[in-house]
Length: 67
Image (cartoon, rainbow, N blue to C red; front, top):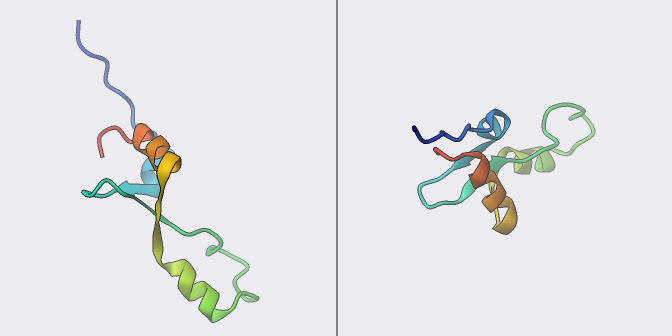
C-alpha cells in the first residue's frame, strides 16, 4: 500500500517561508489599514520581515512538510 502524503497547510504556506538554514520567515502584522495615525518610523519598521523562534517555528514547520 502506498504511503499517505501529508498535506501542506495552505494558510501557513501563504504566510511563512522556511529558509535553507531552517529558520521560518514571516512578515509583521499591523501594516494593512488604519495607517494614517501610525508614524512613518513605525510603518517603516513593519516593512521588514522577521523570524519565528522555538516552539512557534517547530509548529509551522510541521504544517509545511515539503518546504
